[in-house]
Image (cartoon, rainbow, N blue to C red; front, side, top):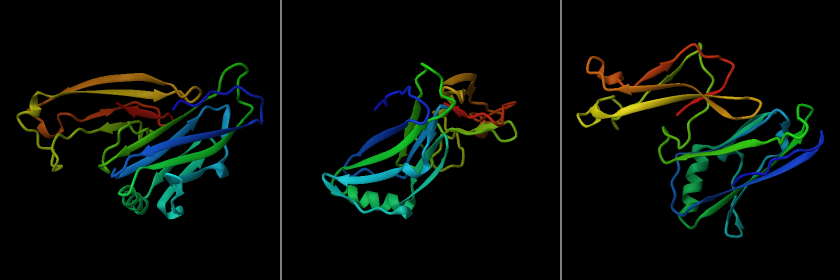
Length: 216
C-alpha cells in the first residue's frame, strides 16, 4: 500500500507500518524488503521490528531467520535460507501476515512545503536466481553487465524458437534527492548467429560509479 508522504518540522518522528500477506502453501527462494528514504528523512536503525502472525497467533522467528542491513537512508531485510525453510513449513498450515514497523525522523535536509517520502519494495520469487523487481546496483569500473539466457540448463543454448526473440534493456538511474528513476539508455538485442551464446547480453559503459542504477 502507498505510504503517506510527510511534511513536518525537524526532529519529528514518523512511524511506518508495512504489512505483507503470504498465501498458504507459497514457496519462496527470495523474500526481501528494501526501503529507501529521501534525504529529508533519517531512518532510525534501532526501530525496525518484524512480526509474523497466522491469524491471531504470533509465530516464533529469531534473528538467524533473517538479516538486516541499514544506514541513515533506509534498510534491506531479507530472509535467510533457514528462515525461508521455517516460513515454508508454517505456510503449509495457513497464510501468514508479516508486519514491519519502523521509524524515521525529519532532518535538516527537509525542504519547506515539499513532502518527504520513502520507497519500499518487496522482492520475492520461487527461484533464487530471479526476482520480480529489477535489482538496484552501483556500477563497477563504470560498467553494468546484463545477461539473458533462454536455456533452463544454464549453458546459454539458443533454440530455433528463441532465435526470433527481441530483448530491450532500459537503463535507469535514481535521483538521490527524490528517489525518482529516469531513463539513461535503451538497447535492443537480437539473435546473432556469429556470436549465438552471448547474443542477448549487453554492457552499459561510461557510468557514474557513485550513482544507483537498475536495468529493466
